[in-house]
Length: 409
Image (tube, rainbow, N blue to C red; front, side, top):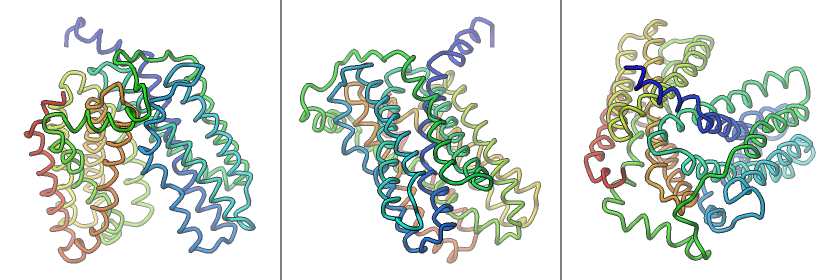
């Protein structure tokens, strides 16, 4: 690469836009596990019944139905900071207050108040997600969506790691109340970023009525050529990778790996491989473009799933486990980056919040529905044939790239 070619790349990597994407990703990832992993540990320690702890999963409902109020954020503009930053600041401040409020609740004596506080956290967290996704789409040029998406995803993962790993480690030394107050304070960089970053221009304007904000995004999308094929692509692109991932922990245990080996290789080494894959994918997409990246990264994803077939045949081998995990997480990070960038690229900037919320909700369907029968399949087929099936299931998603996705680039 010549110096003339590398200069724009380096300028893009170290731009204000990329820093904002990273910080906003961190702010979006931090709250997620505060209502799952950390809250479950707190409730278990407080002696709350396991049935109640299980029911707490329902507080995550706002993440799956956030498209219901996304049109309001497209339609209305608050009288300060602009269309995106005004709503973002409100969501962030409410999120900080609700996280601190969750920490001040009492799981042992009033678990339903805890549930209400946790619901507020997920609602304001989902609202923050809506606005951040819209801001990122409107702030980044199309050529930088891949790199910006990779930094957002990596920031998100760091936020999750701080909340879950850091939160649980802190809880061994201080009370959970203190943990939640500290985590609320960790959102301050996101608030500061919202205050200093500029409002993105929206040349297409915004919906003038609530009806336009609700109905027009759907009409605009479904009147495009190949709209249904693109929705099918979003559903199937990562389905093989998702199904394989759902059963990896039981697989490792069946192969004779200890929990320490799994934690060290899979969680720690795998985490950094995913981070590296996301960054590598984001940089590569500046040169390759979104569609070519989806092809290359999708093929790598399928190949990495096939690596589990080899591990199933080899059995207990730390070097083989490390190689398979490294390749799988690297390719998954690259594929996720291209996937997120693609969804952002096909949204209309007039309805960014609504269309992206709908697409991201659709993205989550395979994680729930496709993962449900994986235990039955693994039990019926055996581990090697199960992972072979997951590899083959990835093929339709790749073939759908041939069907009209060029109309969305």
